[in-house]
Length: 215
Image 1: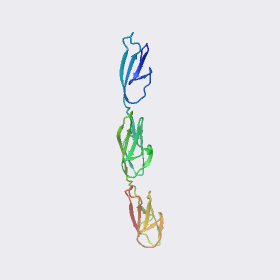
Image 2 (image 1 turned 45 degrees about the horizontal axis):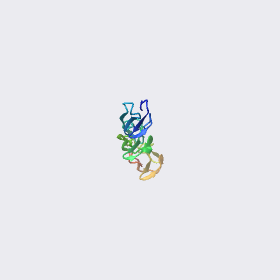
Image 3 (image 1 turned 60 degrees about the vertical axis):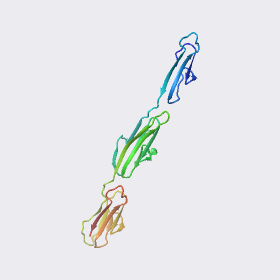
Image 4 (image 1 turned 60 degrees about the horizontal axis):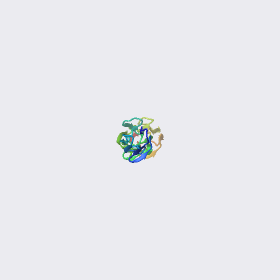
């Protein structure tokens, strides 16, 4: 903007522009010069100034389950990783796998250790934001998967008993190596019975196999 009261021309990097022009050309150094048209009657006929536009630095926010801190949980549990930036392109990875499509989505993860990385990719006008990390540890579930009876060993024929499990995940229940249903009534006569329950999921639980017996 020029405050000249006689005719003049303003130049930006050598190109004439109008007074009060809005410059929206991005990050750069701009040379603005002023030239008065009447060079005979005025002594102050020329001036120039340099103006620099720098890159904007984005603000990056990151959360695991609504907290900017590492997360510890017990399987099964959801992990919500979320990030936001006011400029540039948000990048989110989990153990180096892109998860931008899961931004602010509850995700069920297996037991293990997870590195969540957040960053911003900029451009000519926006600076990059380097990797920032949050870590999640999902511990194996220690819930007991037991096998139980409704009677106390030993019992006397022709008494029967019921075998059952309190397992809350997928399992298989065995009687002497043969698969049976939960809450099965055993009435096969005198003998020694080996009852076993085995979880299907061996990765996320600590109690995998439980054995009990009755005769």
